[in-house]
Image (tube, rainbow, N blue to C red):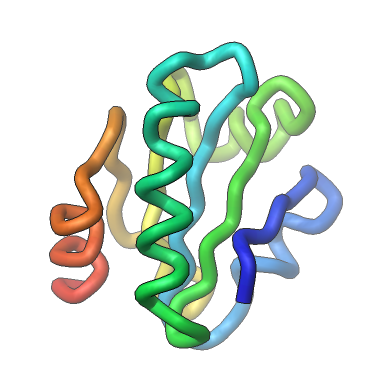
Length: 104
């Protein structure tokens, strides 16, 4: 499964799934976000279909960004069964992201 892109109108439906969903809040002008993109892609490939990875462009989706109080990007929120469990700001190495998800 490829990384999916959520909009304000589709976000809730996309995370309301069973299991783990990793949501990355980003913007195209954000340098650290561009640096984190390959990490997310690698993580998503290694996770196969067991973990859903979603990206939310904060500029285009202010309602969702505000709902989760995203004030700094990149920001990553780990959801389990549709509920947010953990929020991390900044770039995470692939191994750290894998450990965070495994601990949830």
